[in-house]
Image (cartoon, rainbow, N blue to C red):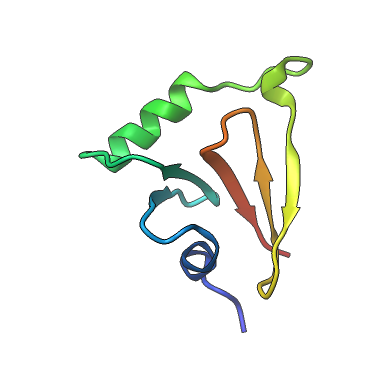
Length: 86
């Protein structure tokens, strides 16, 4: 049975935090309240991208998840992540 990415985020993001999930699996977590979350998430992605090879922006880590299939890829901004599933 395929798992819903929204359910994965609900299980793995600290309660009380708001987040925006994009169709490609990238999501932005907000640690402080934001009025227009989608606009704020897009602005954060514009400001912290694009990724250039050989720059700090190209560094990433992979985090395995417990109890759900897939992993999370982290990058140079701690609140921008990508959920990937097998």
